[in-house]
Image (cartoon, rainbow, N blue to C red; front, side, top):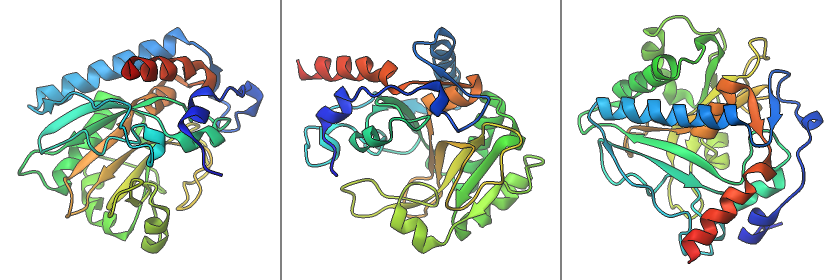
Length: 273
């Protein structure tokens, strides 16, 4: 079934707290002040850090793309945000197909992505080290609850991970490259709808419970995907982080789908005028 932009905007099924299997630590939030405050603080910290290392902040594109054939005319991701090296920005996005998964914790009708492109002379190791600095020092995530899902090429960056201290024994799960390319979901390989090619990536996951089962190459029960690292030689070395997902991981709160619907409606209405 193909979902439309209208279905994404007006879907209203309620996400009950009892339907949250993801972790006992997570709790449903409707219009949580603490969640929104955390999201604001996360943006402040990330913007401040990337400016401090002399990256240039770029303005986001509109949520409406004008191309109704792709994602109902809504901005799918941060693919067109960065136009050169040494840039970063925050892009609002919405995915019409997500309406069918709106009862799944972590799925929202409107969300924001931080996208960062390395400087001209940066290589994959430098960009990976910068990402780890963001996760561990700027955002202060618990290192023992971070893991990556990728393809065999990611193992070339293992020394960078090792230099940042002790990780959990299952911190890296490797997928079959063919499976990763087929899925194109960012856990090993990402290809946006309408794009002719994709890029090799590492999905970044956070364990919502310190006792979560080991992360798997194809199923991540108990884990929340918070971003992607791009280490493909054919693309800019870069990383993207889901700001709402980060706030969920740091606060233990999961906003309900319907609590964010009005924000999507307001932004669409504003851009349509």
